Length: 310
Image (tube, rainbow, N blue to C red; front, top):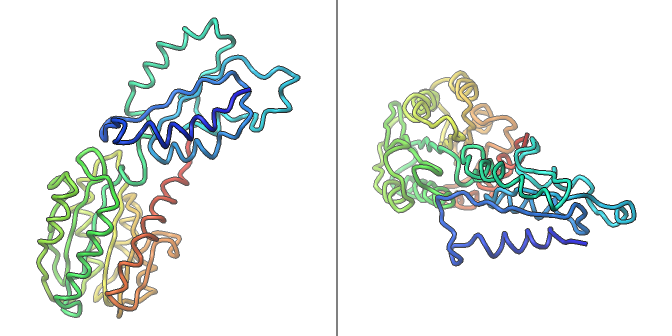
């Protein structure tokens, strides 16, 4: 009898930590060898491992004998536990004597970093563009509060040239690229750049801002990155938001719309990716913006983790 579930849980908590020498930029891989009949549950602990960015490979040797099958808690555990159920992450070996035959194929797959799907997590695999309303109604003090909100969200992500990248646009009637995805590649530099953004003041052309962000930010997004737009506004737009929002959707950009004070909720729902309840937020005053940080991060991660694994 074996308990790989307990082993995977131990590895997730203990092995892949900075204290034990884990390197941020290198993919994490766990190779689990099971004699074919685990007697504990592996699906849930494997999900946690995957969401921590660990690529779980299963090598199942032999299978459960008839008399042992009654003790198997999850008969198809290997397909539930791995990153993708396409055979890439699992090997079935008829006997321990033929185990050596899996060495070369396993090494080849572990070295194929482009296909290690679980190296990608919701926190390290996006290009995030903030589209920030700098109109006159915001005011200098509230604008600093908005920038703190942008910093608080950015802080949650793993930022580097190969992980999550951050860009920002400020808009009024006009638009200004504050910094693109390729400008800064460390968390400290991003937070510093956010602090330096100067308040502009003017009108509110949100539709034009979305279009501008698509052209100036997301056109330079990497093909293998998720594209997230986080738009923050305190008022109703003077121009049409529907057509630019459709364009964002067609380009694969997931849009979160955050409205404050005088923002129109029905407009936020038009801007936000469907379903709007997961992608649009309204807060009555600027000082309450910070409360939404955990929910927005949770929604971004829930959406990422619910993508099909095939």
